[in-house]
Image (tube, rainbow, N blue to C red; front, side, top):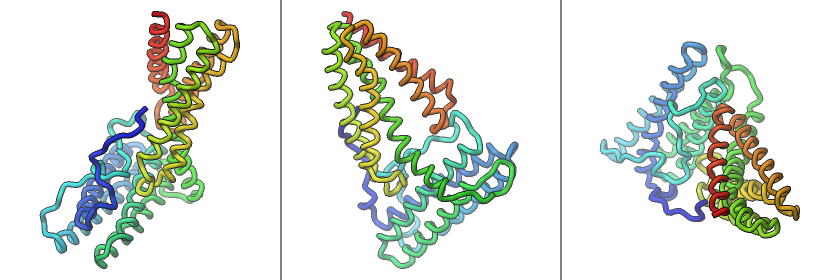
Length: 325
């Protein structure tokens, strides 16, 4: 539960036009490669959708060519290696081969998020550039990436793009990015990390009230820490993840809820009854986390449940062992 972290990343506002163009070249190359991988995965079962991603990959190559041409005209042919992970505000992209599942809905959501981030990047870069040619190219690319986002949203399995409610899809994606993801991170942290102090206090004191106080302190403290960590991690301008303080509020609130859930039973004076109820609450919390990961995070339910249960049991056992020592 980090409160503050030190980063070697550079702020986007500190980049020069030369560095912005170099970053854009690397980003277009990476995105084009990802789209080709997506097309390859889809080709056997969804040939029409694969063709769409082939076209998007070709457009990314054309964007890269235009960026390279402008860079060479302005700054020569020595391009610095600047990647997304070197700039604060970009989301880390998981390699395609690491995805637990691979279906058309997961691809649509991932591609749309990629294009939304790219469009946001080009809009901000264009707004701050003082060179007319650079400003025009970045603005044109922002419009092109926004078109890719709409294409990705409307992909259908095995058939051409078909009309859908773009606003509903946009709202759903924003909900996942701004509410579900930070809330889930908080719920996982609060539910799992507070198990050890709560049950250590329970088995060390056999006192419901003292355990309740420890649990509340751990839950609220973790909520404050996680809330600030999320709020300070990303301003949301490049990623489209929304206002950082909203995400921080969701993360902090759900962290607190995750810890308070198995702390409240200790308001019951009878220690054994309180502990039995707290364990039941823990089971419900872990199931809820596994369900949310399965529903929104592209993780098979059984795998999510196994990961969460194993981690929770290890922390739970640690608390009991320390408290019983």
